[in-house]
Amino acid sequence: MSEGFWGSEWFRLILGLVIVLAFSQLNALFLVWLERKVSGHIQLRPGPMEVGPHGLLQTIADGVKLIGKELILPLQADKKLFFLAPVLVFTPVLVGFLVLPFGPGLVIHDMNVGVLLVFAFSTITVLAILTGGWASNNKYALLGAVRSVAQNVAYEIPLLLAVMSVVLMVHSLSFSQIVESQKTVWFIFIQPLAALIYLIAATAETNRAPFDIPEAESELVAGFHTEYSGMGFGLFFLAEYTNMFIVCAVATSLFLGGWNGLFGISLGIPGVCWFLLKTYFLIFVIMWVRWTFPRVRFDQLMNFSWKVMIPLSLANLVITAIVVKII
Amino acid sequence: MGYFKDIFDGGLSLVEGMGVTVRRLFRPLVTVQYPRKKIPLSSAYRGHIELKIFEETGTHKCIVCLNCEKICPSGVIKVRGEKLKEKGPKTLTGYAIDFSICSLCGLCVEICPTSTLQYSREYELVGETRADCQIDLLERLSKQIEKKSEEKKTQGIAA
Image 1 (cartoon, rainbow over the protein chains, first blue to last red):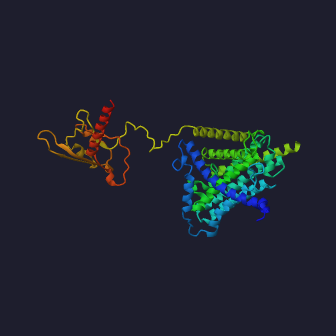
Image 2 (spheres, each protein chain N blue to C red; image 1 turned 180 degrees about the vertical axis):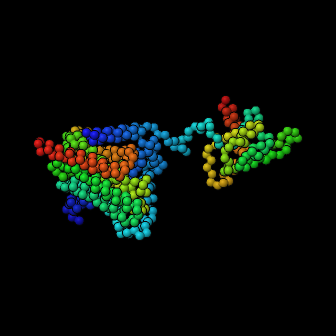
């Protein structure tokens, strides 16, 4: 290997991939633990307590159990698609990490269409869910998958419209430039409506409660991953939590100023810490929402998207465009 | 304008709900980590029956009248006694219960003429076999008496 390799873009990509793979596993382990702790404390119970200090090692024990379990293929299921789906659900999640700006210059590959890339690839998750649900040859799985597609089509529109209003203000699709232009004022103060719509639509995108109807356990057993066992289920689970991180990280860079401190005051805290702090706060908010609200009915979900979210985000986009043009 | 009012009111109620849960997040937990911590038992708790220790005699007052054995609807109680003294009642030589079939009706406690039966405060009743439900009350009583006298001794030393 010549010295050119260590400084090359290839080395950067490989190093980034390794770090991202390790980080996404650790992140999911931590988030599952956090989720159980938050739900526990909201319900006045302590959550996991037995494995490790305050149950910190509980998810590792659960993960080992999942790996040790047998992969069961249902009779008459589509074997190829059945095993392809968990892989397919996890790959686009990894691509999302490629353009996330963790700090100034701390991006694996700074693209000028980063925003577009993240949302283009996050749509593949839906395809994976549909594949898994279809290949399972199970009515609950198929119903869950169909619901997921309908929901994601409905919520992608307000999500992208909310993001567009930010893009219009910055005149760029690059994450680094969007974060750079929030040095003094975060966009959540200029675009509060877009931020709110983004957060709601993102919750629906990641199939989180109260929009978790694709896996509504009280109606559909477990929805699209009913037939998955062992690590097949584990990958879906991992992808859900990693997706949650990506969605919150994107929200942080679009609306909460990314690595910037509040109103340009960084308090001497490094940019990466600001970024992770804000991201995990948003993740906490999403968990908090999950353990507060009951699941919505399917018609309520659709009505809310088409009758409230889309008109509001469209109006927001039009007003933004006019104001940007005038200024 | 009903459209915007609905959105606003709905949003407000959602925020209210989030307020309720975030307040709960910081409230003390109600869970007691059982084997490590225990809470005081309710005074109304009824465990299996046991023989009462009377202060004046230092032991039970069972006269082997067999009332408890006869009234028990499930056949839980087996009492054995022998005529050791020339005058007076029989002496208790065995008092066994099968707690696995006891329905805790309490008739035995009510009928006992010398009120030597009472409900114990035992609640850690886990057993691995059926044999663990067979409890010899007389043996239990002698252990309790031993423990009591030892406590008295240590108290005497302390005083």
